[in-house]
Amino acid sequence: MRRRFGQHLLIDENVVNREIKYAEISSDDVILEVGPGKGILTKLLAEKAKKVIAVEIDKDFVEYLKDMLSENVEVIHADVLKIDFFKLTPFNKVVANLPFKISSPFTFKLLRYPSFSKAVMIYQKEFAERMVAEPHSKKYSRLTVAVYYKSYCRILETVPKSAFRPMPKVDAAIVEVTPRKKPPFPVLNEKLFFSLTNLLFSQRRKHIGGVIMKKYGVDVPFSDKRVEELTPEEIGEISNVIAEALQSREKLFN
Image (cartoon, rainbow, N blue to C red; front, top):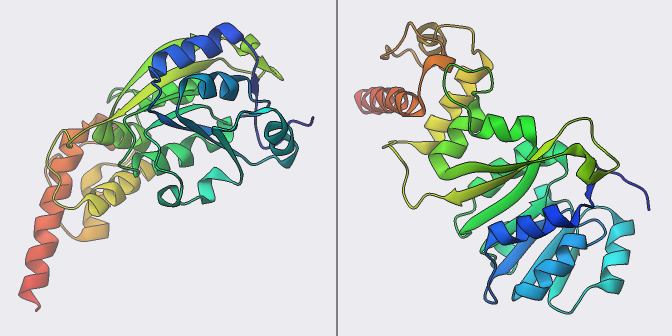
């Protein structure tokens, strides 16, 4: 079988078993798995869960999986980034060894899906560290802010690169993501909050005051700081100031 689409197949069964243990799977769970490859993880998930939805982009693996997996596994040949999660059988957990190159878009997509209770996923270690980074660090990013706002996130363990075939150049990490029931701080306009976060991190070396004035024409607190110096809560506070100013401006001209 050919390895395509950035997949590094997890072959260490000890790591697979720990990943499943972290997910705390019950017989009522419906699991979304992304990039099942040869189905090493999929088979063990199917033994514990009510159903496994295995999304695989590589047709060679799809044909192989359909021949060898149990009836409670639904194999879908598709790009997971193009799938409408709301059209799938509702799933409550995600367990996956993600193809590294889709880590960012998949994570942002998953954070918008409200119905899962836990995700246990393997990422590149550097990406995982960005998910839980602190302000003032080089790894602090728009990803960090989004993950913090939407979920509780922690790195469970490092996975050595020798656990994969073909072996990647870097180590990986198992990460747990648990959605928050409510945001950790108030945001008046979520769309504006995320747009602002993206804008500021795209110009992370500039003082935020000038960036925001140019985009929104609004004076904001912390204007002499760079975005990497701001906590997510402070970005939320700035977002709310902008939201209120834009709303007042709209009322004035209507």
